[in-house]
Image (tube, rainbow, N blue to C red; front, side, top):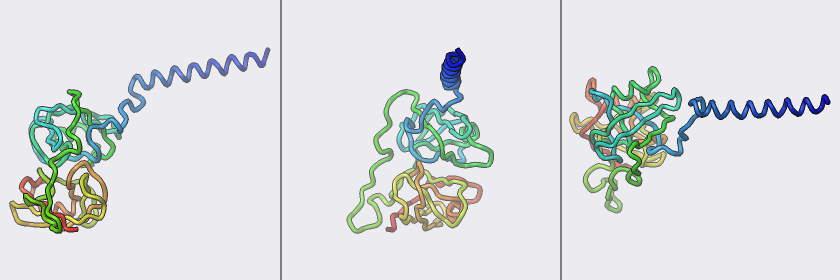
Length: 219
């Protein structure tokens, strides 16, 4: 009889645990949107643009609605793409404030969902045509759209969603003709995302985005 009671008790505990897990997941205690389902890959950052929460993108056309979720604090922002940029999704200041953690200017663990259900353009951005043996692409820049930065410290460097680690790039701000030569040190969701030191070399005072720029491939 004692053995039977133990078996009944164990079965009851197992059922309760199973129900608890199901309820926890349904109420959002477990992660409900795996990173593999994200429409963008890499970190999400922001520009200094004002206005209501919005985003720019090199992959989604203007008018596209996206939901950006920070997996580190489960905060989300629903934004509309209002124009092009050099990122899969680049938030403006108001949108970033809705999802960021205090003091952080980049969201590494994130999910970006396209709310109209359509698939993004494969690969993102426009292809860059290059001449054999020439580091300069036709058209003058290997990236299109605005350039912004993360809060990463250290010597001038960059991350990229287009170029592998070790690639050397020269970024020029056409508004002041200042340039920075950087090495790609890791992945991001942007063609080129500068760190703080690199951005300080090329930005104009008080500006966190470089709209008129040229990115040259030096390797």
